[in-house]
Image 1: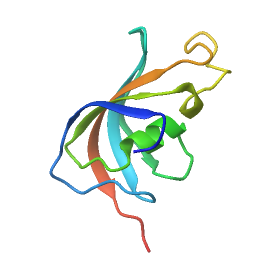
Image 2: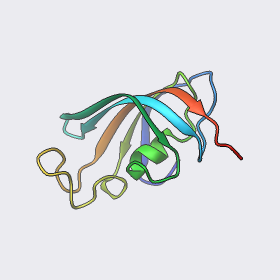
Image 3: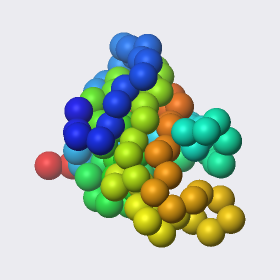
Length: 109
């Protein structure tokens, strides 16, 4: 696990493991450390390691298995840093993700 990510709870899945270059489909809820829910996504897909999402989500999902759930906390340097997202996420916010991994599609080598 990368520096700046702390896994708070995890239920291991039994499916394929997500590795860099794989396309993952998941659902997640995003909270601020004070408990405010700021986003929820269902059936959200991206490719691990391609910088299609913030680093916190990229790094936090890597190593999960299909069917698994993970709750992790990420420091601001892996999120929106000192810029935040106006009206939603304050600058230097610690982010908490609740993620369920639905599928992994292997990269084509």
